[in-house]
Image 1 (cartoon, one colour):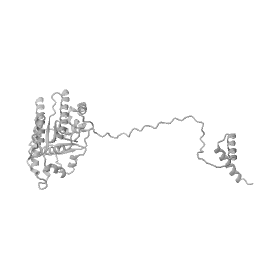
Image 2 (tube, chains in turn cyan, orange; image 1 turned 45 degrees about the vertical axis):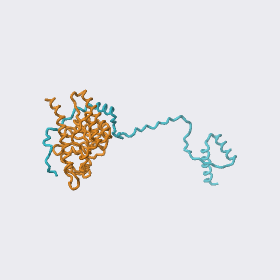
Image 3 (cartoon, chains in turn brown, blue; image 1 turned 135 degrees about the horizontal axis):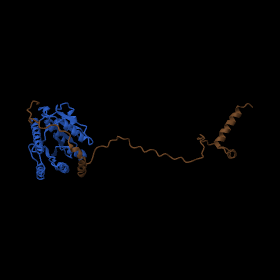
Image 4 (cartoon, chains in turn purple, blue; image 1 turned 180 degrees about the vertical axis):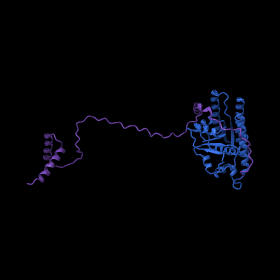
Length: 116
Length: 234
């Protein structure tokens, strides 16, 4: 069916056109689109990663707290007297309980290693 | 030179079918670029069938951001540019209309279609009016194309709609695109009308005659639209 006679004759009077100056009229497009409710339906491109709001830097308050590395807790059942002795020692030497425990263990181990 | 834009804010009015029919007919005699600005890319898919006429070029990457540039580039390359748009009331439609030399508004014979076509007329008329303020003598001709009409029976609704259009001074093509199996088969076989097989598609000759008549009327309308401009130049 490709050999049919072309019914349109010569269309040589239609030629490619140079760029039209209509591009300057883009504001008209905006106005006409708005007036007739022809809104933009172009999906907005996610070109930029959603603006990551920087984490608010937490201000450090001044503190006398010592960094001791002692972060594990031991619950020990003992007698009132033993506990009293420990607390008094801590208060007297101004030494945290954890430090007393470490020193006590050291001393104990040392005493065991020392020959009688 | 002519950029022909098919506009209808309603889907299913026959934009893609009629724009492909016109493009394919024109491509028998001239180079034609079709800008497939429908996000479903129906004409690009049709062209993938491999039977696209040599003089028919398809551009399918047009969107709201680049449609004006795409039309300008195509108009500088080929004598005919045909723009098929998505059936929605969106800004890209107004952008394409701003670049048009002729607008075709395909409309089925239903009240729903006619109402939506009315929105297209308002956009075209307002565009023309606003550009005229800056470019005296600017004209944006347009015409309604009645689509999917029955070649044998004229429904009362269609007659009523046509009467209303004529009364409102809206130009209507004498040629209607009839409801034809061949116009659907173009897409299912991904073939131009002339590439379809008469044994598979009923009334192919009538569909081709219909398409040719439509294309002839469009060419005549384009020549008529060019006339005043060339007279002014002379």
